[in-house]
Length: 284
Image 1 (cartoon, rainbow, N blue to C red):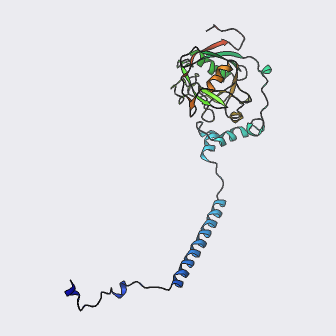
Image 2 (image 1 turned 180 degrees about the horizontal axis):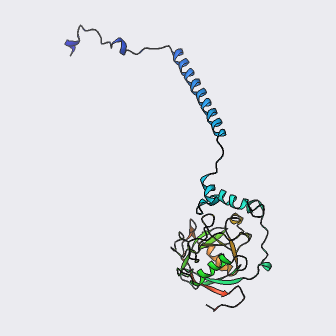
Image 3 (image 1 turned 45 degrees about the horizontal axis):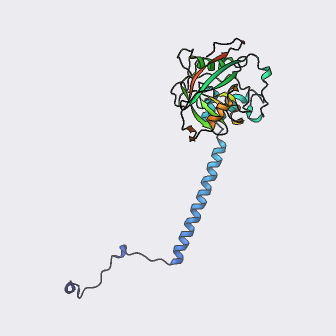
């Protein structure tokens, strides 16, 4: 109260608690020295780290190590480089512009079909010629998935065309989950190795295996809708569409959200029309 405060001296904190006021010039000098010291320390640390890094021998990244033999799934692009670099310039596709494939020298070929329906409408037929003589393993896998004659009973029938890459390809062949997230071969194992990279993706209608890295071919496949050189050296092309590109084109024109067609596009039936030796198969 006013009566209690009358006659008292104003409160002063003890000397050791009082703030010392330094001249502004001294404060500025301290800040400048601190900044210069921290900047010099940062440069020194960076220089030391760079010298230490240069002294450590280079080690390949884990993905490259996996691609060189310790694993086959999910390899990076460097894995492909290491695999085909040892084959020389002819095997390393990236720096060798591909030449058009000469089908007149393809040898024995077979013919298969896929009947494709959009939203339950009457299906259109896509006929595909396969390189039996050059790529017997890849084409055998594809034909067994067309007929369903394999140990697991897997078939392209009643599977969706689940993805459309505009101006590149359509993607189909998930015989395992039928969602686009599964892939399984007809050869008794989930995946089989890359057989050969002999045919470039230089035109629309090329049929090529989808994979998740080196030697991870299963059942999914592309049908290109335009030249797709980004697939050269990565995906095994093993056939071409000989009839039905109008059906493929109609699928690419469907409305899609993030590459997934809004319409239901289904392979309703599949089979073999002609075997590699030239004999006609039973008509579907």
